[in-house]
Length: 112
Length: 111
Image (tube, rainbow over all chains, first blue to last red; front, side):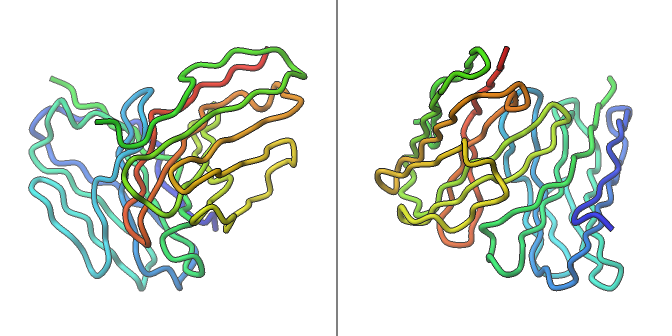
């Protein structure tokens, strides 16, 4: 199993729809997780942190399933501005949050 | 105000040359990083420095040498550039175990 695995997409979703991505990780000792967003030709930016079972921030919900070792990101009422690549990020447990392993990203396009 | 800045933004050079990329952060963070994002968009950590001390050194060729003159700066020097070094290099910084902030990236093209 890869350290961090994501469906690369692309996901083409109509504006206003709900979309969900999954991410699986291999190290069962991992405690915290992140979703980063990367726009085309830009740097990654933190979208959400997930430390326990989940986190919600407006239209975005991240959930963690430790037993199955996956994290999901749900976007409700999607906007055109949500079009980006979403990166699942898992810190290496022995390095705190300093050594991050990035998934290859899931590309999302919101269609008007 | 720019939080993490990198120079240059674009770098085009010939194989075999030596080049440097500079990074500065004004966030007061203790830890800085270099990442490489290849043509397949895969982002991978190369180095991490905490208060000028190297703490993470992934399996990077020793043609790559990071230097941290102070905790606000982390530069990357690359010797004998190869075609496979073409990528986007991102600098990042963080404080303790919190969020990493990334710079805008340096797009390196080796011809």
